[in-house]
Amino acid sequence: MLNKGNKSIIRVISIFLSYLIIITPTVALADTPTPSTVQPETSTLGKGRVRNVSRGQHAPFSGILLDNIAAAKTIVDRKYADLRYKLKLDFEIKKISLQYELKIGNLQASFDGLQSMHTDLLSIKNNEISRLQEVIKDSANNNSTWYAVGGFILGAVLSVGIFYAAVETSK
Image (cartoon, rainbow, N blue to C red):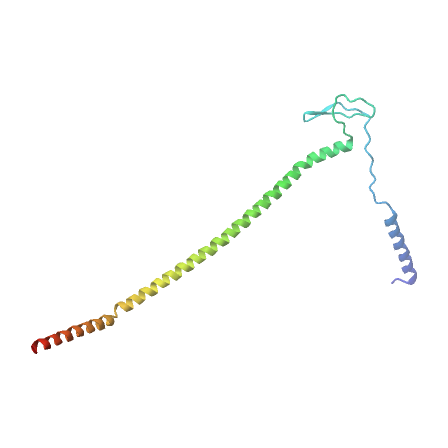
């Protein structure tokens, strides 16, 4: 258990450590680049030439002079340019691929909808044809209308014939 004296010591230590963390500089300590005193032979980098030149020394050829920091930045930029290009290319390829997948998905959904509608319309048409064929079958066996019309015409012709016969016999 902590007594009152231990609590005050812990409080003082925590304040002291917080002070040290805030006040102590947190920058990294590194050496600044210094030009080397030993001059290496001229080396070739691709099609160009590279050689260290100290202050006050004449350059053995005309060109652009870069200090170590600028040369390192140039090398790093060149090294990571391919990586940046590949990342950008991969991003663009994936973006275009996803756009086409979306278009394909939309077209597939439209095709499925049209195909379903076509199937439904074909089913409705076939059902209507079957229903009409059943109606025709039922009405083909029912000749009562023809019998009624035939009976009316036959009755009218017989009536006219009987009337004619009656008029001829009365003369």
